[in-house]
Length: 205
Image (cartoon, rainbow, N blue to C red; front, side, top):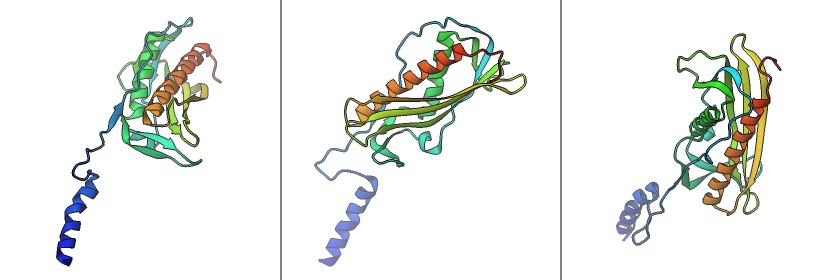
């Protein structure tokens, strides 16, 4: 009897380690969410002379994964088990930002850093936080992004700013979190483009 029980536990162990459902219960499917751009971007009324080089967005190790992040208590972060972004969020945001910059035309030309193109300015960005604050239902999406514009001729800091945006979630789940985070990302990019247009690139500040 004891051997039969032990054999049963050994049979169940691979299922438990793999996170598989027991017979008769369908496995839980993982949902993949895509950060999308809202559509055509209005051309900037200001066009800075020169070429802007865009460095790949930095992110802490926690945000280099594809899992959606949440927080249910101050100072803590967790990850949704069955919800993921379609690609690492910083990589996707870098691509979206480059598309925005090219469409808005804030600079005469935009190119990725390391592409071999000569650049007059360089935009560095760092994703500090990007998560669903689920402390109280349905929660809010929070994004914090740091940006700095550097003049490459003398490595002078032209301008620096931290962008913080919060967007209410419509539902207390991963779907509501992903939708609100997408809105937050687009709001931050709108603010970043407008900020770049206001900068006097001849001044170091």
